[in-house]
Image: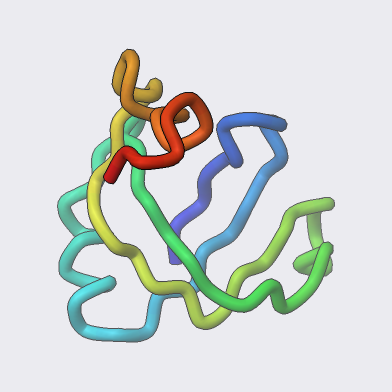
Length: 82
């Protein structure tokens, strides 16, 4: 289980990782690290706090704290961009 915050809204989120790869990545995370994750929103409350609960959560990779300059919205600027 990873307790974190959604960066855009600062909402608290609980990521319940169950796969082996996600668990290995979760063990390497330190406070202040960012992680890209996806999964199914299980509930809007975990019973104790007003926190989003995502289960099962797949942790993809350690992420950047901010978008890479000039690359994030490239397709919206140039539709032919890849």
